[in-house]
Length: 328
Image (cartoon, rainbow, N blue to C red; front, side):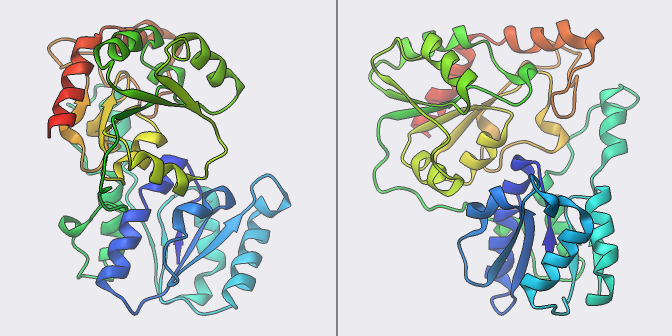
């Protein structure tokens, strides 16, 4: 059994690990415990059973979660329980189910190391991605797992349309590249159509202001589930995203992903799989205060620096990476 409740980007990164696991060990059956909203991410193999928890109900209480796991799984004994979240709720769940398993393991979150980098107590270093650390947790008992064999979730589309997808928003405002910059990109690639990913009324309103004034721009909203979003992204030539769940979702497709980084840093383990060469960010020489935050939450005293880490990235730099992705 594998546990990862949230956040969406981290949950998405579990999928390629499970795919590799099932390919390497075809006779194994996996139970995945996560937020019910993430069900479509894991609906791809009959050997993978999903236990969805509704965190907007009484079901979010730990005793209810444990009860649901036992009921849905048929109260089976698991060969192993792997906590890929490492929070109080997942730790207690593992403890409550410990009598039903041979082994319980927790992945290495590297909290202290990341905090030391943010506080400048140690020099910035390239940490392992979340997916690598997920795999290492499982590899302790399944030695054949090899991260070099990881693959994208969706095979290349036969025909890539002249469409550039853009996910310009993020849960953390600090990670949003100034929306006014996109007009230069739209003007430069005027032979392309643009599909804007906007979820929620505020994002849609911003899209109307900054994108929909162009006839070659359209918006998709939250009516598509995550698997449908992946299929759509897979038909694009390029996808542009911030450091967000959209970036991780797009990275599992065959489409090249250009990601724009400001206060956060790809070295802290959240860089996009298969798409590191298309990362856009200021170098240490240009801006030596990064990283400012691990996830995007900014302290008041760092607000100006966080804004500058994004605003100083010009459109020409992003256009260069888009061209690289198109011609790759």
